[in-house]
Image (cartoon, rainbow, N blue to C red; front, side):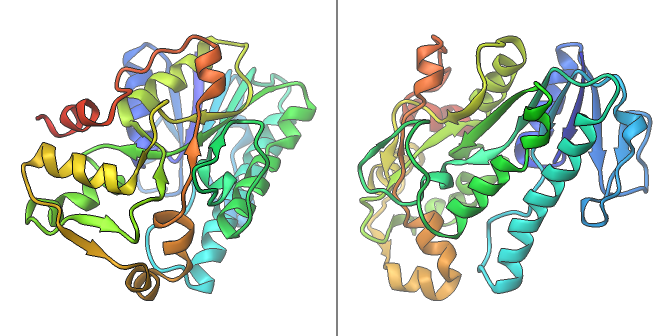
Length: 298
């Protein structure tokens, strides 16, 4: 299968591209640098509405993962980059795919559990309404940006991704330094739910999307066992054999990160992967401690 991928240099994208190629798929990476595009990549510039439609001819599926990282203090400029990088890229890609003479059968266009906002201990399934706040608004419009492909009868999947665990990057990798020094601890009250999934399971779920035509629309890509930040902290400390007596108060996180603290770190999203469970999907790493030991080689 010929598959186009945006965001191929990111944590998920790089692992997915390697896995797809190992499985025998022909992968075309949409990249922003023309330094060495090569035959397996094509340059695009969403901010300029530039994309090579001819390079996408014959693509049977597309995976859209491009977007400004959420990490960092959310200044006005940062928020604008987060929003525009997701909306403009998705709109350009989907509009182009929808007008191809040979249209793809599937587009997997990323979203996030931030769609639900902060909802305490409420179980959140795919039919739960959108939450409030900046990130929930971005996710809602991000999913709507794929409408041109939907209107052409193309199957669209929106993986609402939780915290992706990997020692190679993301939240876990950023936590390892302090935790290994014995400085790890809960964030805020620690009662907020974190919905998580290992990188290996994300890649496996994306392969499932390619093969299972019954899966479409928003799909929660998290394990069935979300944990509180307090539980996550204690488990990571146990795996690393380090104390976790420290804590970072909410006000300090807000001072350092602005609204990003409330919408990502302190937000509580107890997300249930209902559609994957109904489809009989089996997670390789469904419980946190074995998952962390797998990620960290413990």
